[in-house]
Image 1: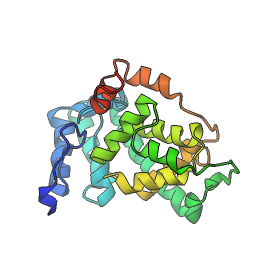
Image 2: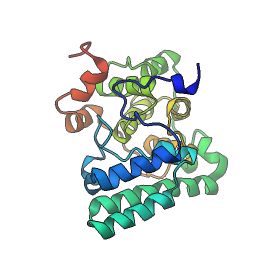
Image 3: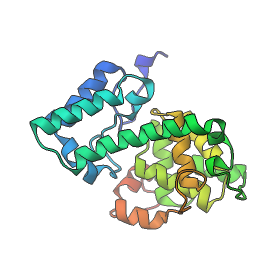
Image 4: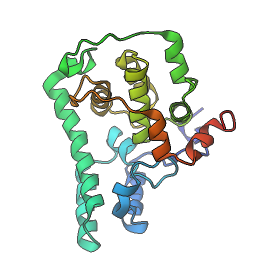
Length: 240
């Protein structure tokens, strides 16, 4: 089977093709045709569809699109239409992405160590059965399971989903966060070593967030999927 024979899942939030041409096409559509950039900050925590977020990350990850190119397109949008919190926030996210690259350059191998860059001494577990349940979307926590099934079937997961499933893995199940990060590495179509391990450290309490928070997954589901539409989409009728 060649790459052209690959079938995209019908519910995939990233149904696009690879390459620079497709990346620029998406950028122009998101900015100038649909003008979704103008509401990015309001929609970026969405879960279903193509336009709740920019979806630039896969092209950024493989070098088909640069942060600099996106930045100058944002400037063009602001000059032709308007400048608001959403245009600022997209640039902020690009800076946050670069920040994790600098963290990696500074801390080197420590981003892969269990104590992270903070060298925290937590008690982590390695329960294969529980790990497999998380991977296969069988934890019994609907919001976590729906996101994990989406990842397994499409190679994509929303930013909101990633934070929740990572927090559940590391802070609720107390599993070695590096195992979760490695699974993401094996699945994500937008995998980037700096962003992946930087965010996993952040959520797991061993990175750039000293507050060591735990996501309340049920409350997150109520807030971001109050009608259960996303959960039904991926869990079908098994839990509803």
